[in-house]
Image 1 (cartoon, rainbow, N blue to C red):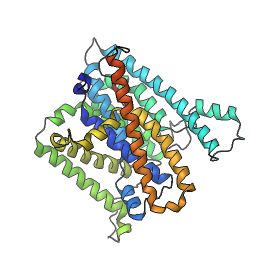
Image 2 (tube, one colour):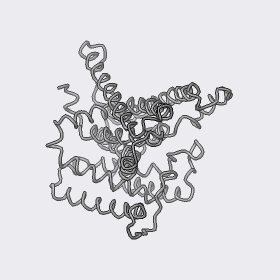
Image 3 (cartoon, one colour):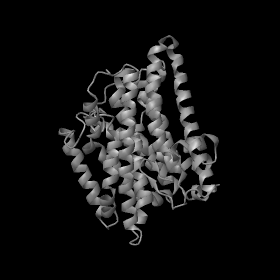
Image 4 (cartoon, helix red, strand yellow):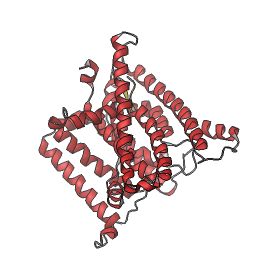
Length: 369
């Protein structure tokens, strides 16, 4: 096995991979791919990709970069690498946005007569082309400041407390700092999940060292919270008595109830993953998921294209009905092959000494290996 992979925490790759798989499935539903009523409802009830992906992104910063930031000799290099990564992600955003806009024009989703200069301006100003990658650009660029807080004794309290205050303000002014008007991921709201993930990542080793009974208790409490929120949100779907917890459940803009639902479900997934990891780690399904998670940035970008094409085919091949669920199998399979080829190519290049081998530089959106 590659020595660098031995030094990676494969649980983070697994969690990222799970989020990517769920993201593909949910986005196929959004593209009107037919899954059938039961499967479509199940995906809606169990969705966790958006909150989970951002939470594990923060975990990656806390788990990987915080220990390095505590070393005075490595701190400056760590911060420079994060700023470099933010610029790199911004470039990916520009290229991907222009490509997807071109695809929309080819597929007839967007009129080709639109002024190209206006399109270029909107892309460069991050008003078009999606706002998830720009959100990561912002959070990674701010990560050195966050690490400066977290490496101090009570700095994590300042970071989490300030983040919570911003979330509370965003409850009434969700697009206060958003560049794209009414985007899906207004920073003032979603930053709270990222910073909570960073806080969790800062104690990841301590969490892993806990007795299994404590991890089970944490997972059980999170499961109860999720169960109560689930009943409150979906009781009418099953004819159950209404449980009004006084919280809303909207993703856009992110409500307190939806944020708590994401967090509680993902904490259950994290606890189960950690408890079962001695069994899961070397299994074929876990290795499959880890391959996706190791290359989360290119896989995320590739999934946008695949999902877009699947949405076009879903309309064209409407006659398939619920058999369109096969699109999900093909999409995830193609993404895995893509991620696997990237792994193989990188290993081949290193074996020929065409690229230098640096210390692992995992980032919020995957790895800079």
